[in-house]
Length: 341
Ligand code: AHM
Ligand code: MG
Image (tube, rainbow, N blue to C red):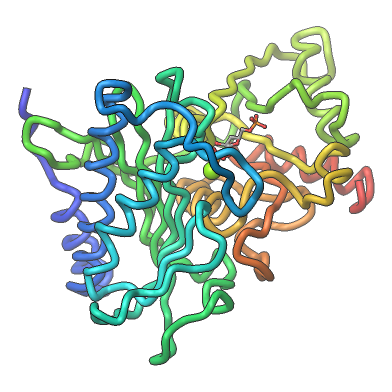
């Protein structure tokens, strides 16, 4: 059934008017992001019918096996955005260095960092996946280098994701709350369906990959043990666990009904010389901005994610985000255990 309602483009224009930040270029940029997401949504929906499942047979810069759809998603985004004249450069999980806008096209003054298809392990099993993106300003007239992308999360002018699941949904913030749009395939538009998303402060649901429990540090061990002790434990209530295997899927659920998502530092990551699993610029920062804008929190355990001054394009960070009371509790457990643990 065709829905009537505010489209994503109309929403961006109205937000611009409301907050006196009306910029045609920005509206056009988000429109291009939305077009890329619609193209991806179609491919994800068709799956094997479009021949997009399976491995690409190569690794990305982070040493991870790429799926065909990781590579295709990256190409779809670049194709949809490089010609716009609105971007100065693009950084992606799937590309070693940033992608400079080809000389054939005009250069704009925004930078886009994105994870083309998050939750890659879900692709072949028809599970939830998504695209995560972060937009910052490029304030310099010259062509950007990798270093220009290294801006703290608080500098983001827009952050969002598109979830590819039973419905495709775009969820965005431009720093004035969080809004969600559902793709109406009959008209090819994202329609405003979740106008002012708020994360409840309290929750009894947590998300963490418990296969790594033996590697966790003391604060996460304590937190999860206390949750799992339920009504008989110190929390005095039962908790539920959900793990989508896709940050977009987990964050979306938390934005809809509360919860806490953890991909913390652990002994296994430390032994591999990694500072976390998830990447700061195109995973933790955009999701962190959405969480804070929805009234939740986003932390590493020792500092708010959005305060981190990045030092590398593919920098990894520990992530704890979601309902404020639970994130605060985890931060407190980290404080009590000492900053190094
Ligand atoms: P990806 O960008 O390569 O898909 O990796 C990020 C994903 C997140 O979506 C998810 O939360 C996490 O990795 C799952 O990791 P694990 O397989 O260790 O549970
Ligand atoms: Mg990812």
